[in-house]
Image 1 (cartoon, rainbow, N blue to C red):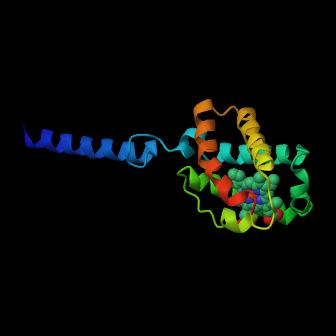
Image 2: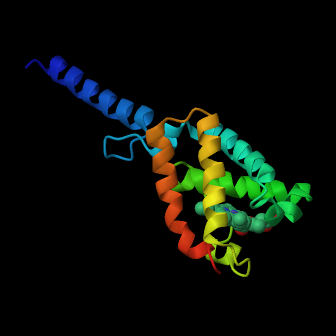
Image 3: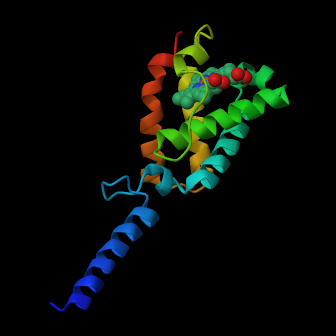
Length: 153
Ligand code: HEM
């Protein structure tokens, strides 16, 4: 091969490597992260807003959030923590800075039925935002194991 062809082949290889790295957000395993598949921060923020609206309308659990909803600052903190938690937990570029799930829910004596109600409110928000079934199930699968740190504590 002529030297300029070798140089061209090298440049193409470098360009392709960077294209994959910079556009695919695949953490090196060939599969886009769940964060990317969900639609990134924009969709996660919209899902979180609809989720909180659903929780406030849900008679099974809304009394739990009365103090939060009644305080604008506290509601914003919860909203931001939820967005960061989902973003970070799905491989996105955020950092969750809130309490652990055990710390945040200890003393609340949340029941398994309340946990299910909240998860149904989240599932409904994902449906409302037309998140595909696979991504919806992947997110719920990440959050479901948190039940042991949240229920009956
Ligand atoms: C997988 C399910 C759940 C997740 C991912 C979750 C997530 C969170 C997060 C991130 C916080 C904020 C922690 C902080 O401020 O440092 C929080 C607080 C809280 N959670 Fe949960 N939670 C879940 C289930 C539940 C359930 C089932 C209930 C009650 C029915 C509940 C009630 C609350 C309340 C009342 C707060 C305090 C909000 C405030 O500080 O004003 N959570 N949760």
